Amino acid sequence: MAKTIKEERLRWVLPVIKKELQLLDVAKVCPHGKRSLERWVAAYKRSGEAALEPKSTEPKTQPEETPIWIKERVIGVRKKTGKCALKIHWRMEKEGILIHPRTIGKILKKEGLVRKYRVKRIKYKYIKAERKPGELVEIDIKYVPGTIEGKEYFQYTAIWKCLRDNRATTQSGSWRLSWKDLSTTYGPSKPTTTPLSPTSIPAPIKEAI
Image (cartoon, rainbow, N blue to C red; front, side):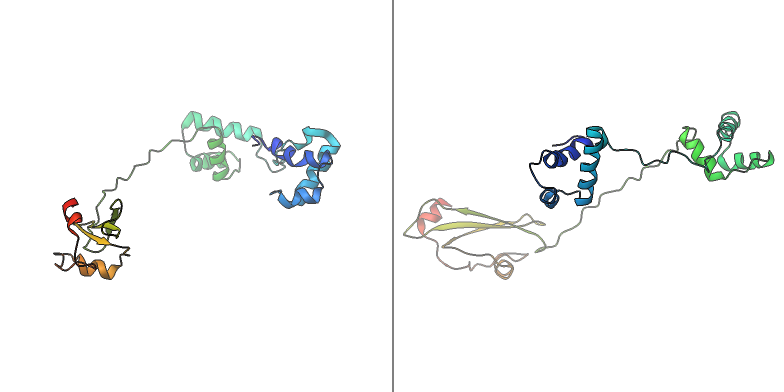
């Protein structure tokens, strides 16, 4: 895995330079695009690995840059008086120096002369939502090892999350729990006396329970 931009570019350029793969084949799997590969390959052929180093896009010259003597004047007034950007703007305007307050603010921020304001943290009080019967149900299934009287048995447990009411019934065969069956068999108050099919539980299971 490449750790720098230069290593990432070399990873895709070198197979093309060494003629191990065609550029079109590399472009099909390269996430950077065919045009980028072409520029990197051309730069590598022209100046070697050094040409693949990322270059800054910052302009070399800034014709409209604030003169250095004005910046030094702004910094000096700030350190001497501690005034804000707007008041410094008014003071320098009286001296015949026209500079926007936002420009003064940027100069002060770049020099680290801005105040650090404390942000009040808001504490939220957690309110636990009340759940109603039937809103959230936990279901667990335990299978009985082996077979009894040629049948496989399992026990399913439905737990109301709000009441934590455990009600277990042992059934034979396979059974798929539906909301209708759960609401009928495990109501929010008391369970019905008639379980789901089969209606009878063998004696070995009763003893195991």
